[in-house]
Image (cartoon, rainbow, N blue to C red; front, side, top):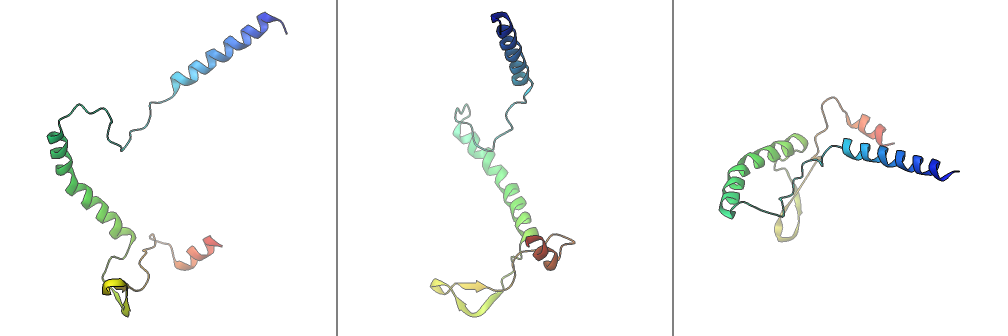
Length: 107
């Protein structure tokens, strides 16, 4: 292969690579707090404290949707410090799914 041909291939490859890099979206938003903070601690604390009730409500609703959170202790069974062990199935299946369907899917 001639040197000119090699340079043309290399240049074309670099051009395609640059186009691909420039076409990529920015990184998705992160749930981590930034490392370089430009906000006063008091304002961060106030903002996060105000947001906490909504976050807790959302997470409790998600747990209640997926799990049976009722207090249903098994009689005569306890953990250390006499903590009751809950009995029965605690997971709620999605609407329209039966235990038999779930068992067949696992097979």
